[in-house]
Length: 104
Image 1 (cartoon, helix red, strand yellow):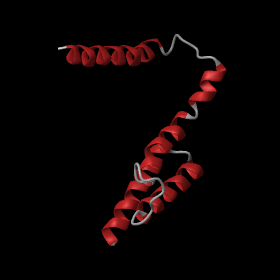
Image 2 (tube, helix red, strand yellow):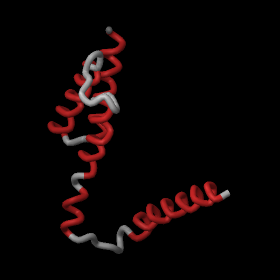
Image 3 (cartoon, helix red, strand yellow):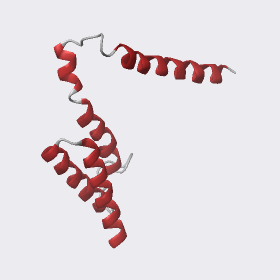
Image 4 (cartoon, one colour):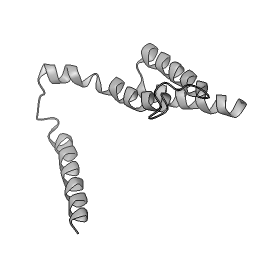
């Protein structure tokens, strides 16, 4: 029973914290340092998704048969550096991976 109470409490806390930003977003002004640091959320989330998948989990830098992943990450990185568009980099990176895996 305590597991379900914990899951429910975590869900309520998560919902309330997200809803607070939506409902109070126009009335609250963030400090400039916070706004500046929020610019790095997208690249950090991209790195958090891409690097573990590329480096093959717990086997650090074991690129044996993972060259398609490495190529897809490089293509996605080029897209993110060139256009600064995270959704486009994710879509183009995944499309690149699917094309490479489909061809080989």
